Every structure is written in structure tokens, then in C-alpha cells.
Length: 199
Picture (tube, rainbow, N blue to C red):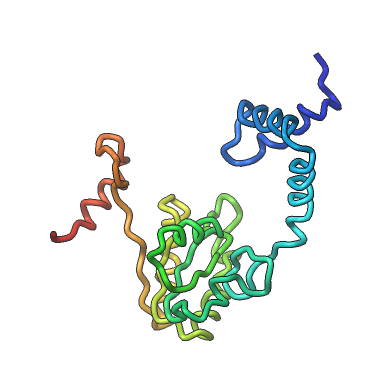
């Protein structure tokens, strides 16, 4: 059956390109949109269509915002001497939801990945070093993901920041709360043992 030009299948094909959305979920979303109020579907479409023109990168940290500075960078209550370096804006958002960090962020929008075309020459290190010097940062917390690229980036940054005179720390990794040890990967379990503390 030829479904060329079918608007439902066209929407499904676009939705499956989103992270975490398979064909089944995409079809469910498409049919939900058909059953929803027309005003809602139009508002959603308008929001998506204008998103790239209404959102920009924060001039200071690189997170997404609709203003020159994001809410965190514009907040005078946030510590300016502690900088948490993350790979993506969603990583900063995840840390914010934990409500334990009161410093500021720096979003790299990249990880070292020579096979993917991001080597030291293409890596955005200059902006981070400049910001550390400009803002008088004393501690940099490296919160890159626990992947091969994230670890390589963390080691590269630690080495580069050694000469900048700032304390560089790495977020801990270990067994997730409520997790079963038998399902934890060996690297995470090893780090949990290495990072153990007194009770």
C-alpha cells in the first residue's frame, strides 16, 4: 500500500526521529493529536515552528534561553566562583532538578570524539578558559557523562585546567539509588567501591 502523501505517516516519520520515540509511540502521538482540540494542535505546531527563532544560547553559559542571559546566569544568588561543566543543556537541567548545586554552569555543546570529528583542535576549550579567568572561578566541577567520550573530555579538561590555577573535581559515579548490584555495570560498580566513604 502506497502511503506517499499521507499526513499521518508523514508525521510518524518525523516523530520517530526524536530521541526515545519509536514507531509505536509516534503513531500513538499522531492519533492523539488528531483527537485533540484543534487549538491545541495549532498552538503546538506554532510553538515548534518558531522555537529556533525564539530560543538562543545564553551569552554566558551556553544553555538555551529566550533572553540574552539564562535565569541561572542572571541570578545574583548563584555562586560565581564555582562552575559546573556539562556536555549538553539537558545535563545542566538534570543537575538543577536535584536542587543541590548553587553555582553556575558552562555548557560545552561537544565532547572529545576524534572518530566523530571533534578533536582537541575543534573542542571549545578557549571559551571555558576565558570565562574562568574573567569571572574569577575557583572550582570547576566536571560533569561530563560516564561514557568513553565523556571520560576523555574530563581528562582533557582536567589537564588543561591544571595550569589555570583552579581546583578541578569530577562528579562521583556509583550504584543508583534503589538499584540492584547484579544489574550494575562493572565500571560503575568499580567506581562505587573506589569512591566509598566512612559512615
